[in-house]
Length: 201
Image 1 (cartoon, rainbow, N blue to C red):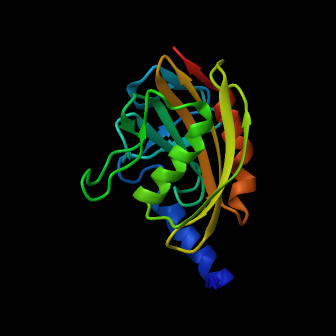
Image 2: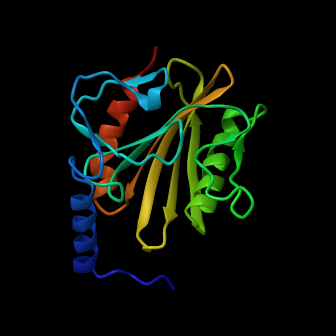
């Protein structure tokens, strides 16, 4: 049986996480409202409708993570043109901890499994479930929208949503994740606004 964190302890931990990812922390950058921002130096740009923080440490060359209150509370991850035969994020050890790769033959329907495999291997997550998937355009191309639930080492149940497409053999994807308690529902409309503001130059 999963051990439940006391509510007081849970909110204390979330508050600490929010402080740790404040705008001025560790090289984080403010992404100001109405300013077009190229993601990871790519041709993908986002013009946010409100201020966001971009984390100073990226999990991959073509990856950028934005948050409102802290990565553990509401994290939007952009994958800005992942090339074929590459993993979504940087591998810590190709020999000991190999990550699944985006392949030339990868289909839109395969992307939820690719993200699941990446989460399980990189974050050591045992509990991850894709809860739904449907065709939906992204960046003006045929795409997929899918949702998922997972639990990390902190035992806090989280929920996520992703939008993805494949353009000229490259994977473009935006994912959002946050605790099912409060933060996911509160920040989901902000994620949808970012998706709608995404463009290719």
